Amino acid sequence: MDKNYYRTRDLSISSFLISTGRVILSGTEKQGKEIYFLFSPQDIAKELTDLYWSDQAPSIQPRQLFQSLRSLKDLIFSR
Image (cartoon, rainbow, N blue to C red):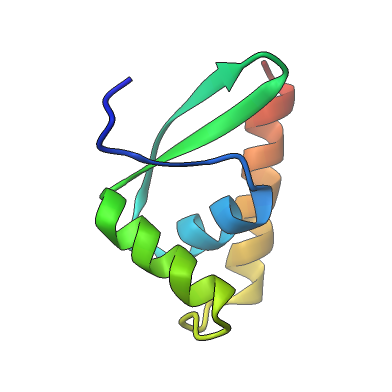
């Protein structure tokens, strides 16, 4: 896979990133038993993740967050 993706295996971060509507889930990557989510653009995903961890993340709609979480779980368990 191209190295220009933000890569994480954290389901909460991934759900948040999707819910912001500012990045795109570009794919997944399996390494052993772990699934990594790949986001683009990389710089925006990194910035949003930093804001998430510093408790300064932009507000998102709870329904959107939980819908994103369900979609990611469906993606994982369909493999």
